[in-house]
Length: 80
Image (cartoon, rainbow, N blue to C red; front, side, top):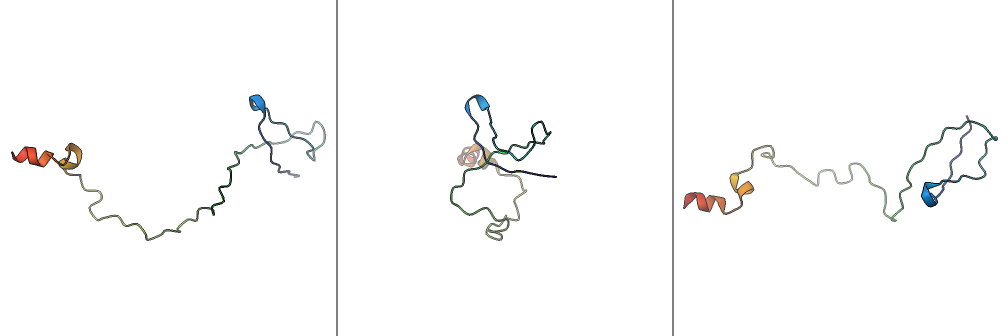
């Protein structure tokens, strides 16, 4: 199977024109269009790069206290 990869820009009203492709006139082809992300000059993300830099406390799944939801003053008003 012959394949070809090329960059192109979308023109006015979403028209995409491809020129000088190495296929015969009338030949059926499969087309896949992907958005090309602009490079910011930064290195690509690496899985596990910051492994071990964040820890989750043992009580992570415990319910939050009412003072979290009602504000820090909730306990003061309840005891008054």
